[in-house]
Image 1 (spheres, rainbow, N blue to C red):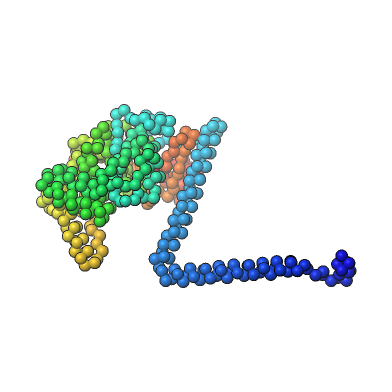
Image 2 (spheres, one colour):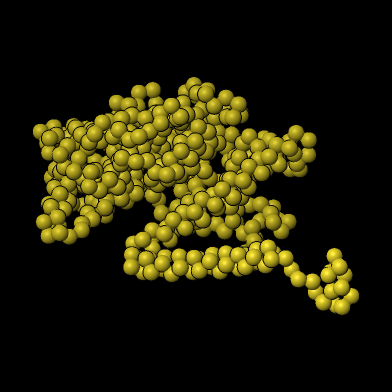
Length: 426
């Protein structure tokens, strides 16, 4: 104490304890060590990625997937917040003007959320999805969850070859049918041989289709128009069927299909606006509802690449020709074999179901067909997308609205009335 007092009187800083000096020294060593470790790790990682471009690409994809997951999480939180706000507004009696109702009060199902297990007494639509592959897509659980909203009218029939599916977690209106290993090619081969009038070619068709589906799984979409006939044995009790895809969100389809459309039309397809803006009368692969009747059965036989051997049809590109289903498969198989022998990659010609089949339907003089602008796709002519909630958040609709003239903003954001140009089944 005396030394400290003297030092203070003399203006000299007292000596610091030895332990404090040692602590500062070790802190500096730790900081420098951590900095060196970080620098060495960065240099090693950069060197490794430079020597391994595939690893670098994998790391970039990992970062991209992480960013995508974060964006999806943020979107989910925002939607949950919107639903919560809507529920609070409904409970308090506040909330302003109700969002516009769906385009049709489709089937008199006043509140689908109240009783999703009920079924429409007259109509039932089967959405058919054949899936090839040992693994399901990463978004499959989200797709299946969206199917539950249409339980009043729609069942999803998902055919697969022993894929790892959690059947217990599926909604009641999602049916999984396993055809067994290589069963998809066998089923299509047997049915198409019968439908094209060539039962003597059953074995050949089964073998070629099994090879095609195992080598190019995407090739199954060429046969979308045939689903209603190929899977006819599974459609007892249904009045309508449609082909569809897994990479979409279905939502409550009963809000977008009217009773009049179910009664009066042979085919109803959803478009995203190009049928009007560009005159593209395609039957879209996401939704093309067919009445289960003689009028819509076997229309696909008019397409050359699906017809009987030696038959003439509209052709893959719309022109006449001959060849048929068996001829098309044999050509693909022969070219694939030659490419394999040469060690070359081969991707066969793809026949779009939205090509020839759409032309056959659009030019039929007797079919009653409707192209309804009720779908939102990842490419669209509308500049804005809205999520509108009503009924205390229990019911939602997605709408696309045209922008206000001159300023590029959406109608309704600047005080003008909203002008809906399309509604979505999503």
